[in-house]
Length: 142
Image 1 (cartoon, rainbow, N blue to C red):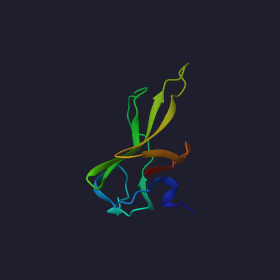
Image 2: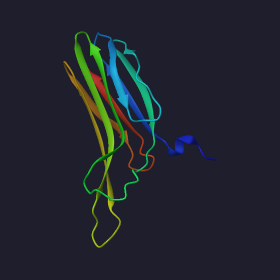
Image 3: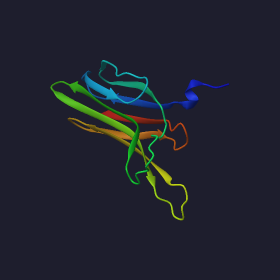
Image 4: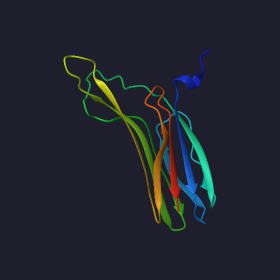
């Protein structure tokens, strides 16, 4: 039995808003096939949203060693009062040259950040370097 999820990179993002303020969406972009950004996050709330992407290597003829290329990227911004919170996460890969004409190695990179007023942090909650490379990130706003 073949499931559409067996060939889908699933990215779970959790925004933990520990402030007394609502967060309102300003903008958001992502490179996935499916997923959307909630219009707002309530005060003192935990919100999970998900994106689906195609976890396939780019079909480049020439391999560029050390150049990071994306499987998935997203950037989004929310307002908190008159301030702006900027969130970002990506899952990248890069080829590493092997010796003696062996196939190149692939290295994976998970990036994440949140920038804004007050105490903000992000952490990679879960990840897998096995196909389809699902991962999860927590963004916390204090």
